[in-house]
Amino acid sequence: MTIDTPSQLDTDARLPVEPEALRASVREKYREVATSPQGAFHFHTGRRLADLLGYERTLVDRLPDRAVESFAGVADPFSLRPLGEGDRVVDVGSGGGFDAFVAAHLVGPTGRVVGVDMTPEMLAKARATTRSLGYEHVEFREGIIEDLPIDDGWADVVISNGVLNLVADKARAFAEIRRILRPGGRLQFADIAVGGEVPTEAACDIDLWTDCIAGGLSTGGWVAHLEAAGFAEVEVGPRVDTFGGARGEANARRFDVSGHAFAARKPR
Image 1: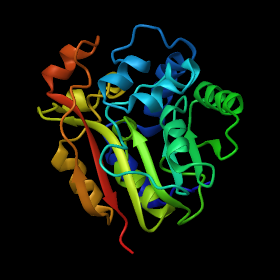
Image 2: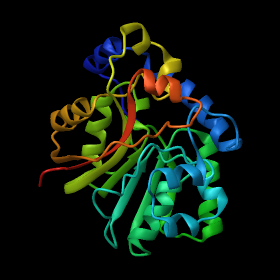
Image 3: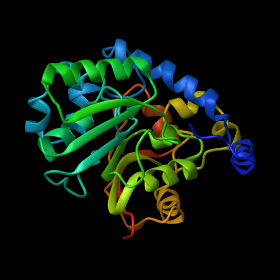
């Protein structure tokens, strides 16, 4: 367990929302995505979303519905750089496990995939699917991005999809991701970029955070966070109309929200 130092507590005090209150709200929303994946959400889910985001159809089709139905990503984190056979991968904010299962196929049985999530219902679903698939090289651990249950320098690649915008302290999250990557390891994540100005009152609204609006950054903002955390070779993928046709489309248009893939490397 990480013990907050005075400087960390000071940082928390300067954040627009209280981190634990935000986590509680996120858990509540994604509990519903896990248990009622066909429900009415502000975002697309499942196979329709995977197709919209451009995932390779053969990778998605080989997975059972249970592995795909609670998927709620915003772009394809595998689109910029490929995973290699034998890679050790950590999926932060792994949800129902969709991206972890895609990664498991790409790295093969000699690789390892560890998903980390904080929502018990998502973890239970991902673990049950892992057992049904017979994947011995995949596991899911409970934890938060700001305090990952992973050893220093273990991962070749860290992936994430639509999760970092839901973290109040992004600097701390990126520092943790950098910690668990080996020297030369890669971060490949997908997240929302906000092109419009988010007013102060909106930035403090937890409902707009869980709607994947208020916690987003501009593409330049994401790049700045990556560089400040010590990452190099930053790459930004093309714009994806993540919310087109979804219930949250109006808010997404209001703040010019789109999905993007990002990639970066931890220097050797």
